[in-house]
Length: 218
Image 1 (tube, rainbow, N blue to C red):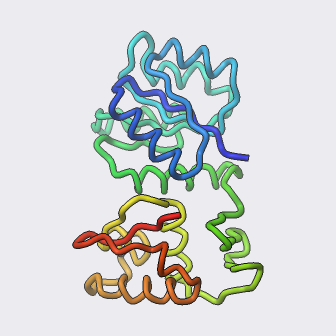
Image 2: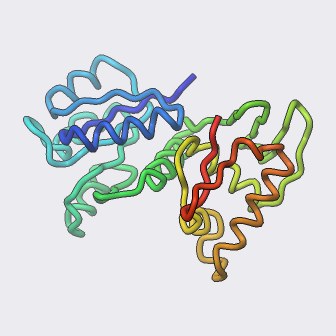
C-alpha cells in the first residue's frame, strides 16, 4: 500500500511541483492550500506524513501543529522562514524536520524517507521492472536471483529507483552516495553507473542526460 502524504502549501506552483515528485516516487498525495481546510481533512482522513507550510491563510502551520499533536502524525515543515528562532520553535512543537525553501526535490524525498523510516512506515521493498530491492536485508534480486552489489552500487540503485524519471546530476549523486567520504571528481559516479547497468541489465533504462547526469526510466 502506498504511503499517504498531505501537502499543505498555499503557493500553487510549489504544491503542484511537490505533488509531481511525490507521484513519481510512488506516494499517494493530496493537496490543500488553506490552514482551516487542512485541519478539516486531517480530522477526516488518515495520513502517514504531513508536509506543512508555516505561513498559510486562515490558520498558520505552527497553530495547526499544536492542534494535531495528539494524532501522532509525523510533520515536516516547509517554509521560507529560515530564522533560528522559527526552526527551534517548529521542532519544539514536535515536527520531525524543518526544510527551508527553496529546496531540491531529491532532498525532500530523502528527508521524507528518513522520517517514515523513523516512524516504521517506510517501504520495506522497492521494485523496478524485474528487480526487487529488500531494504531491511539490503539485498537485490533480479528475476528472483540474488545480484551482488557493492555498498555504493546498492545506494546508487536506491537513489535512482526512488527518483525514477528524474534527471539527477553527477554532483547530486556524488553527494548523496559518497557524501563527505570522497573528494575526487564525478568520474567515480560514471564508473559505478556502468557497473549497475551491467549487473542488472539496465543499459536501456539508465539514460545518460547530456552534460547533466543520469535518469532511470521505466
